[in-house]
Each structure stands twice: as structure tokens, then as C-alpha cells.
Length: 349
Ligand code: SAH
Ligand code: SF4
Image (cartoon, rainbow, N blue to C red; front, side, top):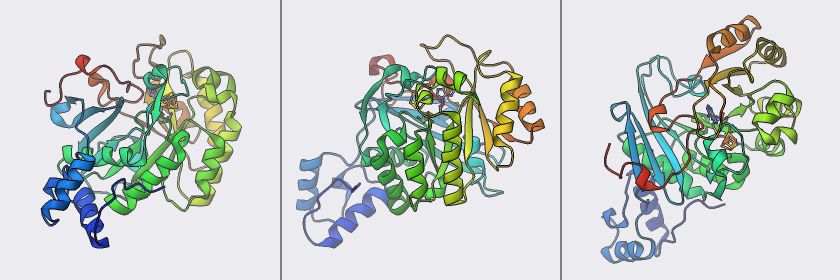
């Protein structure tokens, strides 16, 4: 699948010039590409408009360190800047941060506008699927985030809207382009999946060293199926087998994501069962305090520290994800497009 959506007339080096402008020089408009003849620039601008769409709306938090943008047809991207070695966008990144590197800039991208998989606790799932995104629409989100964060992005997480493995070809093509064109190693790209087992097995065969995160949320099928409807089709055991296949093929540590919900998946027996599932593996658990969404009545667990301790007692490596972006509905599972009038207009904070 070709990610580059523009046909550039003239000799082959013209396309290389345009690519450099788009991927490396942050051009937003063809008219900025001053080493192209004016006629070519004008024709490209007339045919395609801008290189990147303008956000329909922006929201800003943490004094500009967290910015969320809404794009048509209703998908969101979150750009986050982290200063200081102790902070991180999420634990999945932590394994890729060089000791001493202190400034991380993360793009949390969407692979779909909405999502059709209907996880009950997720705002994106509550809105349903609008459409899957084209690969360049995914790459554009990274370029936008780089702009907002002052020029570069160091990490990309597919933890925005949508299920990347339900939009498999486009997500993979986008990751290749992020690696080859934008220059961010695939190792610094975390693909988070709800556990579409056949697609996970396919991913294991790809020669792409992406980092995998599996949204498990429960060690037992009964609880998991209540939270994640696809759990009925692919039980926990099959998801874990697919995660092992990925680990075996790529030699890369897999993260287990677990949103802690009071009285649903935060019981001690579940921590013990999860520890049992992970015993003898190097998978680590990233606990996510449940973020509030309009359509899910349950509450965040008050047992996050205890659950983490119970997992650790069972020999599991655990981290707790921060809740960055909550106040602008930009935290995990809170992305759901709204009419722009309900958000601040682009440019305001
Ligand atoms: N579809 C993919 C990636 C997008 S969701 C997946 O499900 O993994 C990114 C992460 O946010 C997932 O781990 C998801 O389970 C989690 N999430 C969804 N809703 C949440 C909520 N309300 N609170 C906390 N985490 C949530
Ligand atoms: Fe879709 Fe992931 Fe939300 Fe489930 S948690 S509805 S798979 S975006």
C-alpha cells in the first residue's frame, strides 16, 4: 500500500524534493516548496490543496505540554511533551527511553475515526465506527504532532481512536512510512491491540520491529468478555499464545494493558490469576487507572497500588500509567469526536 498520496509531475527527483519538504521540513503547503518551479507548486496546490489538513478544533492542557486536535471526519490525535527522566507518556515507552534522555515527545495517533469493536468502557467504542483512516492520514497526525511539539516526535503510540489491527494494511503502511520517511524507528512505535488474534499472528510474521501492547483487562474470559466483546471470539488463552508468537518472532517484550475498574477486574484473585498467566514470561503489565467516559457507569478502582503490589508479589513487572490529558478528554479511552462547537475553536486554549 503506497502511503504517499501525491502524483508529482516531472523528473523523479521532484518527488524526492516534495517528500523531503513534507516529511523532513514540516511543509504544510506546496507553495512553501521554494526549490520547485512556481508553476509546479501552484498546480500541486490547486490539485491537492494543503499537504496537511488544519485541525477543526484544538484543546490544550499542562501549559501546552498536552495538545489534542480534532480532524475531519472525526478522529483525534494527542501530542504530549514530557520533560525529565522520571516522566513518561506510558510505560510501553519506558523500555525505549535511553537513560539520561529527558525530553520525550509522543504522538498518540488514531487508526480509525471511532471504533466498531464496542469495548464498554471506551468512549471511542461507545461512538461506533465512522471510517478507517488512510495510511497518509495516520502519518499526517505524526507530522502535526511534531509541529506542535517544536519539530520532532520521539515516540508514536497507536492508542488514540480505533483498533489498528482492524485497519491492518493502512496501519502497517503508516508505520513503515513513519520509520522510512519520517525517520522514527519502528521500535519506538507502540501498536496497541484489543486482541484480534489472526491479525496478531500475521503481525508476528512481518519484518517490522514494532512494539506490541495487548489490551487484556482481565485474566478470566467471563470478565474480559463483559468489557471487550471480541473476547468472546478470541479467549484469553489464544490472545496470550498470539502475544508469545510475537515475542518469539521479534524478540520484543510485549506489554499487557489493564484498565482497572472497581469491583469488576480489580479483585485480588484476578491479580493472582494474571500473575499466573505471566509467570515465566518477560511481559510486563501497564495498569491504567480507568478514565471516566459518559457511557460507562462503573468507577475507577481505588485498589491500583494494591493490585500493583499483588502482581509484583506474583513476580510480575508492573507500571502504572499516568492520566495525562484527562481534563481535556485526551487520556486513554476518552477520545470521541464531538461537534467542534463543543470544543474550543482551533487556536484558542
Ligand atoms: N484499540 C486499541 C488501541 C486504542 S485504545 C486497544 O484497544 O488496545 C488504547 C488503550 O486505552 C487500550 O488499552 C484501551 O483498552 C484503553 N482504554 C480504553 N478506554 C479506557 C478508559 N475509559 N480508561 C482507561 N483506559 C482505556
Ligand atoms: Fe476500540 Fe480499543 Fe476502544 Fe476497544 S478499547 S472500543 S478496541 S479503541
